[in-house]
Amino acid sequence: MRRDVFQAIADPTRREILNMVAYKPLNVNTVAENFDVSRAAIYKHMKILIECGLIDMKQQGRERYCEAKLEKLNEVSVWVEQYRKFWESKLDSLEMYLNKLQNNKNNESK
Image (cartoon, rainbow, N blue to C red; front, side, top):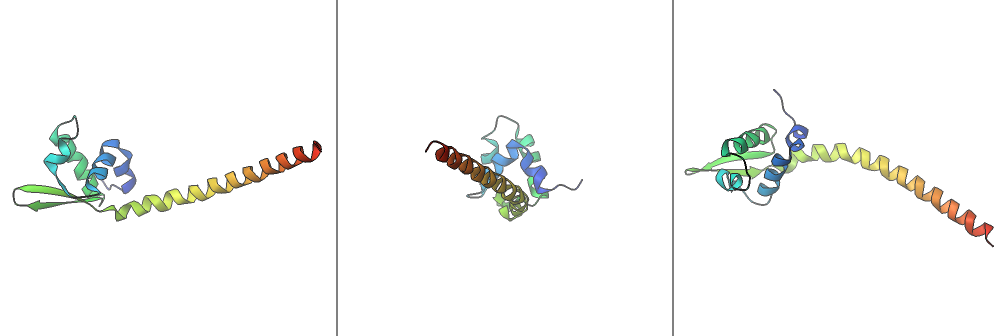
């Protein structure tokens, strides 16, 4: 099954894992200790993040460390940006309409 970045961030546990490793690489045990699920469940989430290219797993001695590769999130940013522009346009139109109503009301009260 081909996974994409949208599937990866759809799950709150995976988003939290990304948040944890975004600032510094952490070993699998450190990540797993922050959740009330099994280490195996966390590893499954990490596997999805690896498949989507959002984290790398690196072996350092006996430990495996997760390192964030957040460049793939640009795909999400680009997708969201189109809707931000749409809503900004709508809100700008609403603001202009409300200003026009306010000006009309002010002119009528004079």
